[in-house]
Image 1 (tube, one colour):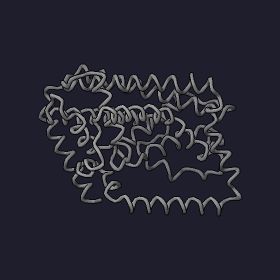
Image 2: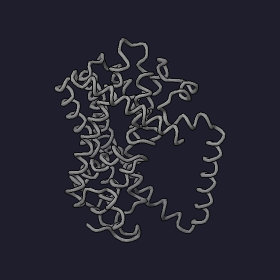
Image 3: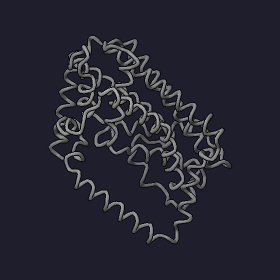
Length: 324
């Protein structure tokens, strides 16, 4: 996959050069508004995560500033590091402030936090399929910047790998069966919010639904900033591209992949490839810079360091209480 990764990098930097030529035409007012809406979206998502954590640890006082700082720091790391490394940062920063918290309980809270997203994103995917804008498997294989086309080209090998992983998981669970009950109790604790309908609806679903409205509004403003036909339809298409590009996060934020998909999904519209690349790269750069700056501030305030890698060597073992 190394040659494919090199192609993605080349395509991305080509798109960056196109963006440089289009920079003078950017609508800065709408760009600023888009970033403001993006920050508000992050705040709403932190509120939802706090509700999930409170349900998991009802006897602990969990401050909003703790979850907001941890969430923003994790988003910042995810913007520059692949494979969602920022999620580990979220877990570390929150765990350090919840006495007795366990990773086996905290990790499911992040899964619970994405449940509503999966429903909405799945609905958008079905909508995009219904109107025929998504590429087929054959097209995916030919798009040079879609890093996960490897899985489509090697279906048999992919199936074997996933099968071996499944067997390894089953063997591991059998070997550790003496600890299974306690392990699953901790996992269930992380999903406790699903047994509290009122908290789930008002504390999780409501802020996340609002965050999705802000997400579409953010994309609408970015479209306006880069002079692409700004409609709710096109903003939703851009969101579909974003969701697809981060499905297998081999590059930070799906960089490279987004540029390949955006051109295909917007095919047939009266917009140039240069404008689409400028929009995709410009939006990506603006959001990454915003996320990284906010993430560094949050990490500096919470962990007294600006290096996310420096967080983990000092992390105590999972069976020891975390420091308050």
